[in-house]
Length: 594
Image 1 (cartoon, one colour):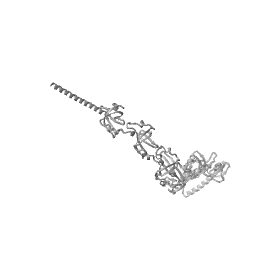
Image 2 (tube, helix red, strand yellow; image 1 turned 180 degrees about the vertical axis):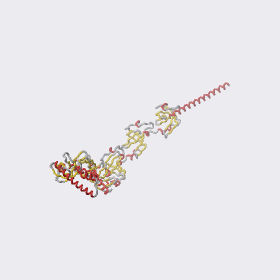
Image 3 (cartoon, helix red, strand yellow; image 1 turned 45 degrees about the vertical axis):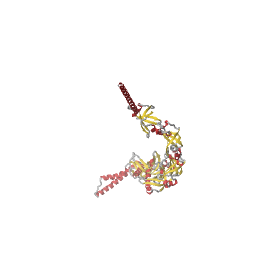
Image 4 (cartoon, helix red, strand yellow; image 1 turned 135 degrees about the vertical axis):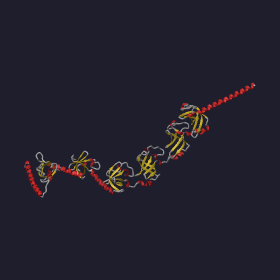
């Protein structure tokens, strides 16, 4: 039947239906009128809109297949004309067209009520998409789990078919980053929708959200049943520098590196690889934060419990050098037990700047136990204690007052170190080098490597110090100062140095006196060098002697004053003699005249 004829036939059928409908409406109105009830205009419009709403464009309607053509399917939706849908829209995901039957009811999308030829335009594909979108929206709003098949890999993630194409970001695939995304292609995954934009046709999925929810549920169950002190099995899930994360079957526990072994390890990978199944002890459970602390070494006995019996203080032990630091070396005595040999405990005689100068990693070393601190798990060891301390014999070999000989090993600002034997040095302080010279630096009288004699002044065995002196080889000139010099004596000397407050004059070798600036001249003096000069020889008067402080006070002014007074006294004495002589002569002449 031609399209126009079918259209006319359809229209006549609709007119007949309208006529029957009008008769029914008239009878209904008469019935209503007889019951003295009236139907308003609004109710009539409502009934009309309800009758016609299914034929509005953009809606999904139910239709019936009335004919199947080689390339299309004719569908009747109850409108005045049928709609034709391309057969390709019925293809499944595999590309096959499922069996279709005439009279079968399907859902279609009303695209247009009439095209150019007056035929309605239907689409099964759009109807299915709308249906999928409705289901997706409902699943998104109710936070439901959906299934999707991974179809391809794209930039940043995967494309997933959930009825329509959706995006699964790489960060939302698993709890941890997935390195190989290609292995997921073709797999069907349980997912949740985390973002939807119907206008743009964008859907973002997440598998991670689902896994996190499942993990939290499992974690809550495990935390309730887990007890501190309990030993459980777990699988090494991840390894870091500070420890390893152990999967306890739904919750991860941290096994810190310090709780892995009683011994020493540099990295957890020395003990484990990912996937290892191990027994661990639950040390602490933090219910508020959902954290579990685990321990492996706590399963075995602490080796420190009986260390004082196994390695008593004073005993000799052997061990392997496992670590070297600037301040010493650590020796492993047994698994989990290490002792420190401090750098100061390595040699009686040598000054060890760094432990590596004496021992190396992996060496087997013998040492003496010096101290044990069980509470803090520390053992102090010493290598030098394996040999006699040469300082124990020092008092016999170098008694105080004895004369020793050695070479100058080192020169400092404050003195020189004399090497007497291997590891035994004595210090000659700059103040003990000369009775007479005021040295600014020891290098003025000694050189490095020079062999010299010195006198032992003092000995400190505990601090390993030996004090020596050069000047003590000669008598102390100050011992006889009080016998040789008295106050008011006139002494000769040489100006040796200046100070702001005066000038120093050497009276004899090793004995100096100070001429204060106020005692340099009869006149006021601003600077000592204004009236005297270095190496100038002159006389001065002793005005003060203090042998305990090794000080002698000298005065030029007092010497001048004494000399002036002496000259005045001499003049007066001579004048008196002259007066006496004149008086005597006068008396003689008077007697002669008489």
